[in-house]
Image (tube, rainbow, N blue to C red; front, side):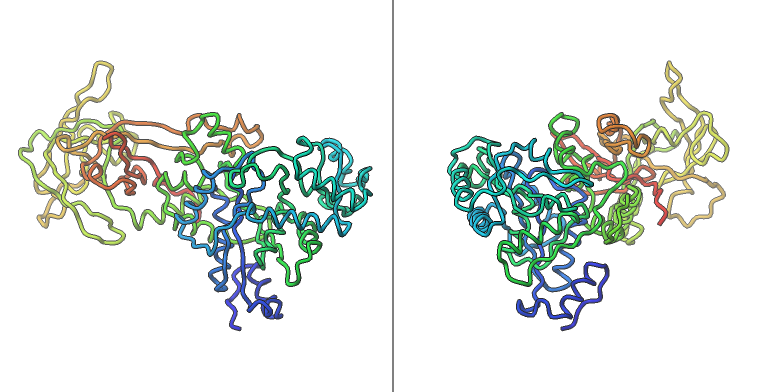
Length: 548
């Protein structure tokens, strides 16, 4: 068969296996899975895993199961299931089947009894603390449980009584019987089932014993006929256990193969569902989809294009080695996408009134929609009374200042060159109004010769037609780079959101919700509306600090 050219070490392995005929008995069909636990919203780290798994499905014409690994009923819920499905679809990925580990609870129980019957599992009465204490260390072997040599008959009886609800939580566990002296601590008789009298969001009160992830995950893969279990590097030491569970369950070859890759780590970014949930529960953010959150729904709510996220993961690549990616690289991918696709508009976050004293009337000027795509121009009203941004004027300008100052000139974007003749100050010395003169022959697009020049071009919003606007600007939730050694609580950026009030051209107010724009010299923002109020939320700044 014609194989695709391998682009990473995972595809090299798959190509070698296909060439060796490993999957001929299965029609050379490659089947992978994306198996999140529905105990929180997916975050940006999951996008890399999705890109790898869905990428294998697409390149090999295979299949992919979206599986909810729901073996911990105390933390799982349909809210998280629905958010995962929505996130996968928003990113543009298509799965073949939606399945649940809880679909296999009956089959998993049967396999657990098989382990017992084959002498590969036993019921243990040690507490969780006692099991931990007898597991040993990296340099010392563990101590066998005193219950390790119970008979098959006694183990089956006790396990069935566990299932029947005879014992309280923590009273007994079912453990695999492997090797308490193994150099791999994961192989030292791990727990297979624990007692938990907790209703499951799908199965209700049917079960009071639940399978452990390390058991349910590989066996679910085998039940589904998965060929490759692609997971992050922290599961590398679990691979011998993965293989043991599948083999002892009696599944024939070819069995699923676990392959590990380096997980995605990004500076200033919290990459743990447990800590993200803490931010939500403690009210530090407004929810899982807060635009400051690195969750997929948070990124969506912020206005980040899904194509930019997939491009970022492609640029990071697939590797074995642990590394940390600078968040500037992610911002750069978002910026590149928006630069090409976002429309241009004008808004001022710190408005100062500018009055053109020699202008009368009203006219329309042409403003480019998107110069990158050359999509033409739209009309903007100009009445001679406008707002400019406070950062575009200085009473005491530094050397080489190219914006407006008293006696200086500047071009109002798409309109005219103006000269500042006078400045009206408030009681506290703040700038209240700029009185300016315009030069009719300097209209943008005019072919008339003109001797008047201006070094700077600034944005503006017409005072008559402009709309009141709330601006929301964001910074990372963590201060990692400044405080890398502090604990989680001290690393939080308490100024991660800033709210400003200014003016925006009416075109922004009239646009559809969630439309992204590049605001001149300000950044990329997404338009939304809440209770009739215009809101522009920052997606990413204009400044690109990433060295491509």
